[in-house]
Length: 107
Length: 128
Image 1 (spheres, rainbow over the protein chains, first blue to last red):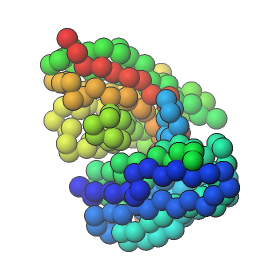
Image 2 (image 1 turned 90 degrees about the vertical axis):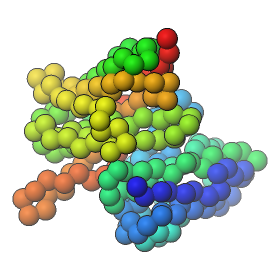
Image 3 (image 1 turned 90 degrees about the horizontal axis):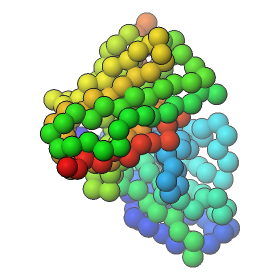
Image 4 (image 1 turned 135 degrees about the horizontal axis):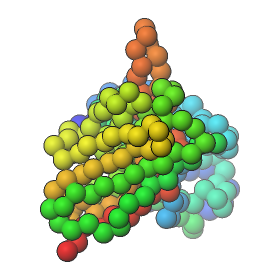
């Protein structure tokens, strides 16, 4: 199985900050990398697929980049609604696997 | 706008079979345009993909669960179901159903391996 490792596991930031979350795959997943946002008690919400394609309706302050084994999710200017847990997921091969999550907290 | 809703018992005894159903509204499960998956989330294992089913009954399971999982569908009700046998406390989790789009390559359908939308989730506790 492909192991997905996110860093940091948690981060504190303020409204308006720029935040970057990193995801590393244990083997090459090409650009088949997905990002989700999950709020407490809710299901994950798709943000980005194919490493950098924004899902319809997702604000443009979210962006993704990377290929191969190293990927990043960037939020350009944090809004109050963005404080949540973020997960990466590799979509390259079965079984589909997820990162352990990065919790984004208010400073 | 398609919506998914999980249903089933919230408590299952050890060694028994967990059974859940996902009802799809606002779309047809038999259209062939989507794959339908189960995913679970537990504090210990995080998010874990369980398996998917296609409208024609083709399934693919996570090898770690394959010996205990069956996913089936009922197109007449726009529902698909999960059965997980011989459960233990380690199977306690929130179970989600979710949809995957698909891509046709040379006349063959392949799932796009991202999930949208998801159901709200259902907590299943394994305990005597």
